[in-house]
Image (cartoon, rainbow, N blue to C red):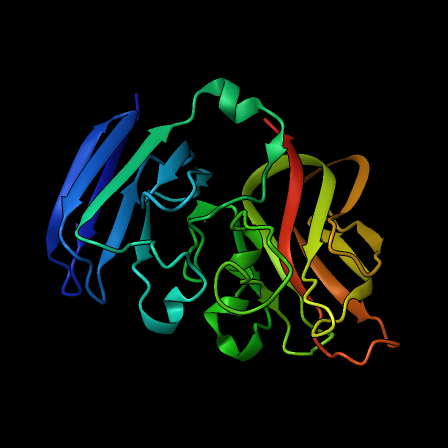
Length: 264
């Protein structure tokens, strides 16, 4: 049995609501979120769990690399990369449950986490980048692992992406927070043509030091690669080379998927 908790606090740190239960916990919160409101999920270190901290967000399979994860409710520009219905209204349903062994061991997209944020350091997987276009939420690294593969435009949801601010030195890192074994990569590149350009080449640098060169074409469809299984804790997408014959300076990434299993 593992003790799970959900806690909502206001901007001053006052507890507005909390629920604690063994292995599975639900919370119904009546009230409108205000700027500074936070949601904290608590679980023992090393817990595999399914979390759904808003009824609009997709449920996420996560690994807890710490004892708690706190999400600050986004407002204003920070909300633009989310479905506008997310965190809205005066009635909210939150849930979390321990992942049973079959769900932990199954082959899946290990990069998926709709609850990731830039400040996240405990709830894996987590995506971060050295460059995000103008620091805007609609071009943040977290967008590339939120599960949304719609790539035919750019800007506010449902067209959020990872934008590189025209900088070929941009790199996106995916941290799994534990050891996993992977053998398949999928990149959904943004395809808002003719506004967008596209990458012809890139590299994946795995945490074991190995490098996998990638070749891509102009496409709305996903790019896919299979390879010999690698046991890693993370990877970086880098050395991005755009098509020089296309006048657009705007290549971008809509989604990255990394398929595999837990290494243990």
